[in-house]
Image (cartoon, rainbow, N blue to C red; front, top):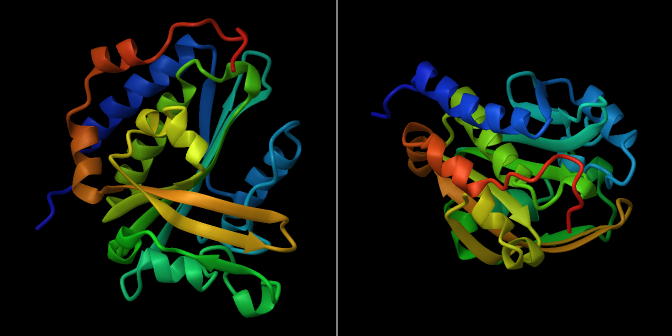
Length: 246
């Protein structure tokens, strides 16, 4: 039997990352209304359009089955975004969910273009089943990149997903550049495979060839329960907010 989530331990874990964000002048908030989220992200210059996974017009998310995170700078301008949702794959798996296009549209027959397609060749995707927390739409404003915000945002998202769902798996899809630049290491995702999502969504103008990255539920629990404040502070650069990023 899986042991229950310890609210105090999760609170301490989240506090470490929230404090690190505050030191950089970033204030995080969390929300559950994805219409509000899309409204904010569409009004944010330089951020690309949110994928249909997190857009209510294509894939509604019931209350309690998803959340978003927004980080604003000292001027109240959006600096960081992230989103997560829970997929019930107790009778399916992540590979099947992607290839059916149900990961992107609640009703592919209604919303998908005839030429939309997704191929998943990552072997482990077929083993990702049960309660699956999917994280996506991570965006950091260009002037703040390279300052440790990816690690901070991922830490907050991991803590919230664990607290809300204690999922069997936590996963994301990322471009190869995320591995090459060391971002996946900052996300603290322990596993990665190519062929996660070879995707074409015609009307969304999306063409991807993404890797699958993931954690098991027990690995996520271990992250939350064994976190170390000093290790985080050493891993996050101390550059001032506003300094130029890559």
